Length: 243
Image 1 (cartoon, rainbow, N blue to C red):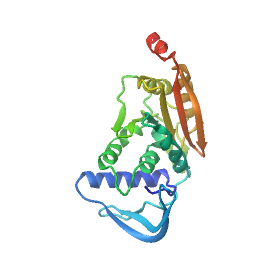
Image 2: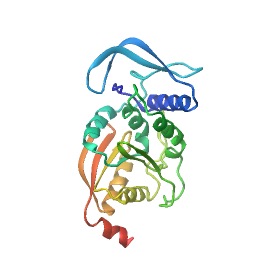
Image 3: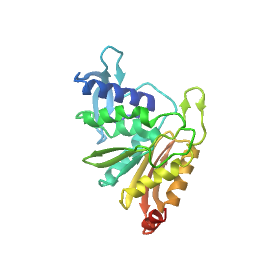
Image 4: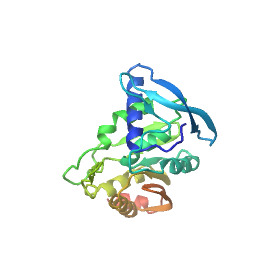
């Protein structure tokens, strides 16, 4: 896995172009360049890896071009993975590109998983619904050997470079219905990962978790990213039954 810091725009471009070509039967091309890159184990090599989409300019997977705001997702994800133990992971929508990038072994990538993340892109990033989020809305989940990866329903918040956030809060009821998804897994522990998070979104999710019998047992935050270990108490079933 390539472990240099990557930013949202570069990660998403690499992810989508790589997956689209691979799933279409066009093997992606990689070319080394003279530079150092870090591996998942912390060792270094003398190659910098470039992905060259067919008919377009290359994308440097090890050192992609800066795309503010910078994030610290590499450290957060590397801290989460050894502790996960096949527990479900919930990915807040804005964290999907960095999650998919840093959890992929780019030497032996799972092409089906990458293609799935590319396909769901329009569903995880969309304008406001104009109404409250409903529990009947479709959900997005990837079931892999490491466990379930739950991608959050889109929040309705939009960010544009140079302008900032166009909407300042998630759609009404978002935090509550997403917390119910975590409770419905039946797992006593669910991990939550997110990056590039406005505080209003974090606050609404905290409120939703609290109202559904969850406790944030551990929390790690770096820059605009978070990893939470969410635990559900014995009152979870009572809360679900009451609703």
